[in-house]
Image (cartoon, one colour):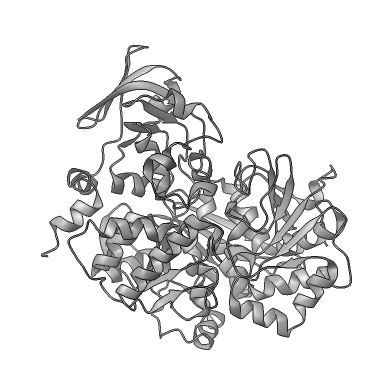
Length: 417
Length: 164
C-alpha cells in the first residue's frame, strides 16, 4: 500500500523500505530542540542516563525564548542551567539573548531544518517545520533527553488527514484564518495522533510565512504533525536561508487517508477563535456583539514573522490604538526585529501607540510582557486561548490573524480591516 | 500492579495550562510545583487528593503544550492512574516516559463519577467501579510501551539498550 509524505520520511529515518499506520518504529533524528522551560527538565533526566555525551553537538538546538530576558530569579537559574550544559557539551546551536528568537521562527530562518528532516522538539509547536516538508513533532523533556543521548526517538506511525486547498485567499485572509477555520471544522482533537497533510493549488499559492502558521497550529487540532509538499517557494526559502540540501518526499498516489477535506480558500473570511478553545471559531462577519478589548498581542511562533508585522503595520500606520487598549508587538527573532526597523514598521507601531518588545514567547503562555488581569479581554495572534493561558483564570483570549488583531486594537473591539 | 482509590472527574479537553499553569513553570522542585496542580479548574484538588486516587476525564486529556510538568504534577500529587476517553498525543508519550499509568477506556471514562471508588489492574487492563459494581476493559499498552514502562520509563529503557 502507498505511503503518505509523513510515512515516507519516517520509513527513511527508520531504515525500513515501508511503514504503515500504527506501526511502532525507532527513527534517527536530524535535530533535537529544547527551550528554557523544557531543557532544564531534560538536563536533569540526562543525569540519569548512563551516557555522558550528546549524540551530536551539531544536531541539538537550545533556544532561550520563553521567559527571557529572564523574568525572575527562577527563570534566570533555568537559563543558567541550559547555558552551562551548552558550554559543557559544546552545543553549536545554543541561542541566548542577542542571538535568539522564538524557536520556531528562528530555526527555519537559521537554515537548521531542511526538507525531509526528522525533528523532535520539547515544545508542542515543533510541528511548524512541516512547512518545509520536514517531519517534526513536539515531545516532552524525557524524549528530548533520550534524543540528545541517542539521536533516536520512538514513534507510532500516524495515519493522515488530507486537506486539499483550492484557489487563493482574499486580501485580509491569511494562513491564520485558514488554520483556525480548519480547527473549527474538525475540532481540537479532530486530527488526534494523525498527520495533517496539506496540498493543492491553494497550498502552493500560500506564502511560506502562511504555511509556517498553518503547520504551527496542527497541534491545536491534536495533530502529530502538519506538512506541506516541497515546491519552488519552499526550495527558494531553504536556499536563501542556507539550509542544507534536503530530500523531497511526495505521497504515493495510492496513499491511504482517513479523511479528505477540500477547502476553497477564496471563500474564507477572517476568523476569530472565542474563549476557551481554538476550535470555538466564528467568522468576524458573524459577530453581532461588540466585543471590547483591553489588549492586543501581535507576535509569537504562530504570527511574529515579517509578513505578519507588515500586515499589522499596514493596518496601524497613520492610526491610533484605541484609548484603553494596550497593543503589544513582538517580532519573533532578532533578524525580523531588524528587518521591521529597516522597513520603518517599528515607527508605524510606535506612532500608533503600540509597544515593540524584544523577541520572546512572553505573554502567549502567560509568562510576562502582557499578563491579563481578572476579567480582561485580549485579541491575540498567538495559538491557544485556554483558561488562564495569558494570566488571570477569568481573563479571555480571542485568537485571530495579525490583520484582525491590529484592526481591533484601533477600533477597541473585535473587527476586521 | 494495581491502583485503587477515589475518583476525581473532569470533562473534555483538560489542557496542560490548567493542569499546571505556565506561571509556575520556572519552578523545578516537584513538590512545590505539584502544590499548584489543577488549581485553575479545581482549586481544592491538592487539598482533597489522597495517595492512590484516580483521575477520570473525557476526550483529549492533556491537550496543549508539551510540558512534562503536567504528568509530573499529577503523579507527584498522588494520582495513581488517569483514565480518559482519549489522551492528547504529547501527554500520552510523556506519561509513559515518566511512568504515570494511563488508560484509554471511553465507557469507563463516561460512566465513572466523581467520588466513586475504583480499582485498576494494569496487567489485565481491567477497571472495576467498586461503588457501582461495574467493570470495564481498558485498552492495554502495546508490547513496546510495556517494555518502556517495565524498564521504569524511557531513561531505564535507553540505559538497558545502550550497548546496541
